[in-house]
Image (tube, rainbow, N blue to C red):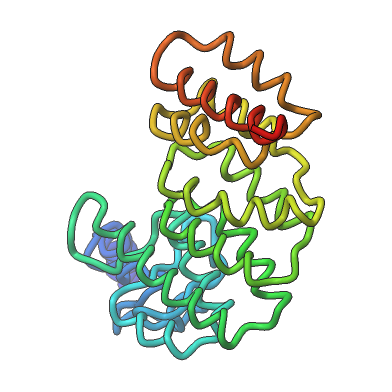
Length: 261
């Protein structure tokens, strides 16, 4: 009898090990956007599909924003919705479309622009200033332009001007630069032009062709007695071509205006 019981116990152990090792016996993995009905409750499982992005629940967990979550974005405070979108874009965890390529990026951009509009109406001045500075660095010209437009409506600050200069210095977007010139002139008249010269010189030298051409054609209002010599030197260093000719014209116009011609 003891031998029979021992054999039964050994068989039970073997069967238990076999079931433990089978993939279909393991509960479905819980992610930040849902769980298997058979899985036990966990902090990750409490986040419904399409919920607003929350901090990572573990090194392996990534929260996801899905199409169903767009409605939640529209009812959340705009600053919270913006944070959600920026984070999921940065971690490549947005799942707002079923398309391929840049579809996801463009959908995030569309939603960011909507939330910036909401922020301009419902956000506090401090939130608006903080988000305008942050989104000036977002990798999309439409978002950067909207952030710049928001910043232009706020009380000017050296911090915001510096954020704009930093972002524009890395830009290859001539359309964005065209929208930036009036704002930069507005800040310049208030003495907030720190970094302008380095930004424009860098763009003329190493910016994309269209950005460099744009700066060469539009730098005139930013010339002054303290920096005109530097830009004259830049013009001499440029290879012959449209960019050099545009910068020379800007310099001639400046000299004529200040010579009374």
